[in-house]
Image 1 (spheres, rainbow, N blue to C red):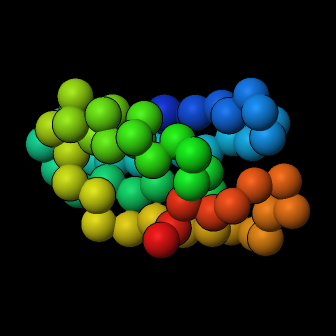
Image 2 (cartoon, helix red, strand yellow):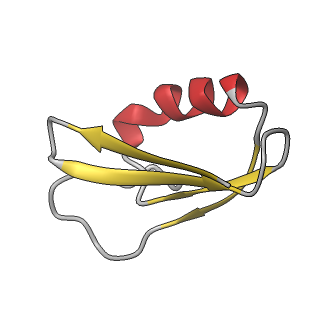
Image 3 (tube, rainbow, N blue to C red):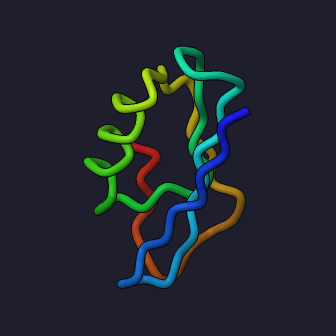
Length: 67
């Protein structure tokens, strides 16, 4: 299992990348829009294919990266 906790220091927000194995499907929880490039780079490094992005709650401190 792949689990990465990612932190955006500007908004103080934690996001999470989850996948079952290298080369498999992945999901991101609570992505921050300004960190989209970081997420894409990490997905590429781990040879993962993003299939889901989920917001677990509303965020007043940042714009969601779901879009």
